[in-house]
Amino acid sequence: MFLPGLALATSGYFATGYGVKSAGMGGVGIALPQDGLAAATNPAGTAFVGDRLDLGLTWFMPNRSAEITGNMTPFGSADGDYSGNDKRNFFIPELGYVKQFSPQLSGGVAIYGNGGMNTDYASNPLAAFGGTGNAGVDLSQLFISPSVAYKITPDHSIGLAVNIAYQRFKAYGIPPMFAMFSESPTNMSDNGYDSAWGWGGRIGYTGKITPELTIGATYATKTYMGNFDKYQGLFAEQGDFDIPANWGLGVSWKAIPALTLAFDYQRIQYSDVKSIGNQMPVSDPNIMMALMANPFGSSNGPGFGWEDVNVYKLGAAYEIGAWTLRGGYTYVDQPIPQDQTFLNIYAPGVVKSHLSLGATWATSKTGELSFNYIHAFENTVNGSGSIPMAFGGGNANLTMYQNSFGVAYGWKF
Image (cartoon, rainbow, N blue to C red):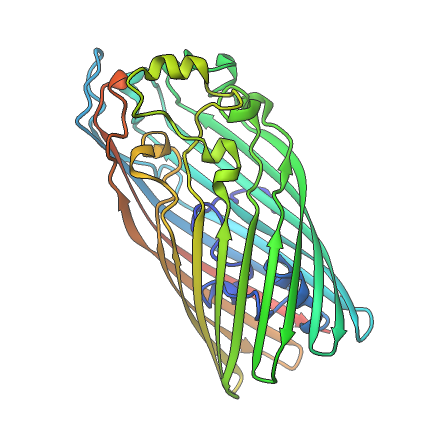
């Protein structure tokens, strides 16, 4: 049930937050565990949520588009406006379970969509280069994260999660012209879905400094994935697509008994994965020779050219009777440089600012219904020298905005 439609692009291609409650507060959670999905952000937090089960579903609706200007090839111009929304709706499930084995030891499992990217162009932006039919990509990432947490003292805990990851990918509509510069031309496009498994880990710390002030820290290793063999001619390192390492710090403060404020900082190391971080040598006057020396699929072949990003998350929760009201704001650096927009027509993860609202209604002493709404504001990255002259010159401009609605039910045992 977790495999279909796991596609989103918010903090680059990572989710804003994990768990409907966290996402409704701008994604904060490093120092504010709230439910059974706490281990997805900081496994140490599971020591403070008690015995519980949470099930949720998010309806995600991205709007992505590209514009090509100033292009002219011997076969015509690629100029035009292109909508990547032939597929518009995605449904992302989540599950979290935590069991307290003793006053000191707890464990559980979180299952969630870590991230992804999707574009589906009914009108192929690269038709002038020989691309036919629809064009796009579909990347989905599912994490299964069993975790344990241990309270060193009643107010301080450490935690460990093993991230068992599954991902699948397909690309279609990439022009045959690009295959001329591939290490494996038949394994670049239109080969249907390929999948891979992998693993990594996450460690964390949560500590209550005072009854009102809590701090947290977490680090996730790179998740080492098997290769996409069907796309070994597209992604650098023969189809490798590891999931980047990331780390973060958080603080939460109970300003008054009813009001909690929280802030998280996160760093995502996209550039450390060659298929994501390697750049297209667009400024090289001998780009054809450069691509022949380091073709698509080779160890130093082109990737999406993404840079590392800083993510800043601010959230607030206010309790009033049986209700908890939430709100938050997230800001992420731009991962896509202006000269790397050409290939990112397929992956226009350019949104930067997100506003979130949420609430929880305690339906009983043991049950609670939560929901949220997130809007990622429209943002455009205008290309600058992004289409090489060998491909007709000009620029690719990328635009995206997003909306999502989430709902979850939690049981306390």
